[in-house]
Amino acid sequence: MFRFILEHQDKNSRARTGRVITPHGEIETPIFMPVGTLGTVKALCSEDLLTLNAQIILGNTYHLFVRPGLDVIKKAGGLHRFMNWNRPILTDSGGYQVFSLQETRKIDDSGVTFRSHVNGDKITFTPESVMEAERIIGADIIMPFDECPPYPCSREHMQQAVRRTHDWLLRAIADHAAHGTDQALFGIAQGGCFDDLRQESVQFISESAVAGVAVGGLSVGEPIPEMYRMMESIAPHLPAAKPHYLMGVGMPENIVEAVGNGFDMFDCIVPTRHARNGQVFTSRGRVHYKAGEYKESVDAPLDPKCNCFVCRNYSLAYLRHLFNCGEITAMRLSTYHNIYFYLDMMRQLREAIRNDAFLDWKKDFLNGLGIKT
Image (cartoon, rainbow, N blue to C red; front, top):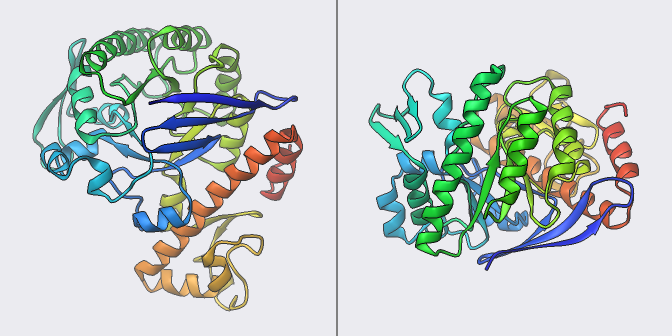
């Protein structure tokens, strides 16, 4: 049921367009996946996401395991039915979240034991138990359990994390094959900012029996130039026949840079979190709409170049008023706009790549954001 079709390679960069075919529909790449950690993209409902034409969303296995629990999701018939969403879903394994719970976790080659951040319950995750959880959730694309070390990290620690991630992937592949679902299992490459470890891990994942190659462990605190250096180091080693997923990298300029290095799929909480904190993304850069300078901007939309329903119908002054009064409508409207901005950015990217104009588009786009190229 899962296929990746490479459609066009930009003549002047590694940027490319393609299609991912899943049981719940097709996805045009490059694509941004709004993050629905708990079975919802914060402040939006599934009908909003359909109106926005979100082609795929992301859920998180760890958070769904804790709340509402696998028994509830199983009774509902899977996450698609539970949240009334009939398009593709990708689930992260929760590896990043588990390894962020440093004070409560114990790790060895068998898996990780840790405490729930909600009620302190003792939980054990193994490669096999994560596969079982993702089968119950029923996502179209699933991630294996991996070890995501922090930044900075010693080479010795990173080597161990890469080895463990590879070992856990082989166990996940075996478990996945034994159950014969139509879910597409990706592999996750680790390696931090060590070129040789990154390349070794990408090579291992690429040669494994997985449907796609995900790159984890970036955007975890490393300087932006280091992130870009790693993208360039990894790019030549990514397999052309499989989709390339860059996990958790989400500022617009970071995504554009990654697309130029051949990455196809992205997710991040940035557009939703920024919206809830009074910031929106626009063609002229980020706007802090809660600022006092917009108090009387009654005729100015968030972005005059944006065609979303928020920009067509509401002013900066109104959004500022709602936010400063603590009205939840501000969060919904600003989140809607930010998701629209991201999805429209990806649409423009795809069009530019098809026309072999990615580099010109990139220059104009980043200059509009106030970023010199």
